[in-house]
Length: 149
Figure 1 (cartoon, rainbow, N blue to C red):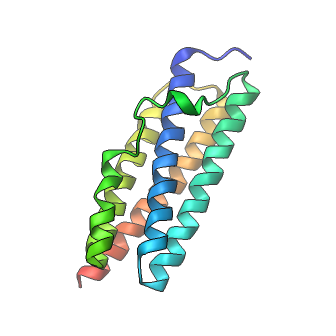
Figure 2 (figure 1 turned 45 degrees about the vertical axis):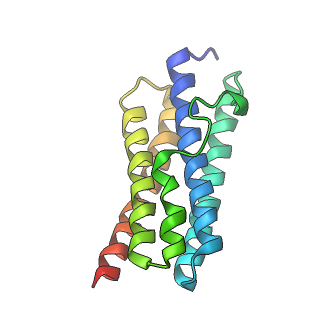
């Protein structure tokens, strides 16, 4: 099945956002002290890794590979950069705020992807992943709000 450049670019962008999230959550799970957040962040890191695999597998089925070296962004997205300083401060609210900010970018990427003309099987995958990302975003936001008291 031939895949057009826009679809390939869209999937690659989602893979990059998932990689950012996986890295961000992995870092957070290693450095955060609260056990509940440590477990949650580990779960979300694993979730993002499986989302990456699913997207890469689908690209492969369509005759393309995700060229890891061709990352447009190159390094972790700006949204996850401030996570390190929040973790250093040991401030639960700040850590959750930074994770939520990273999720904002993922949610936006998925919304934009769903506006594109994707092949139906790919669209189903993207819709399911969007629901997972949105759920993670909303859960992080609720935890942040609860942490604020």
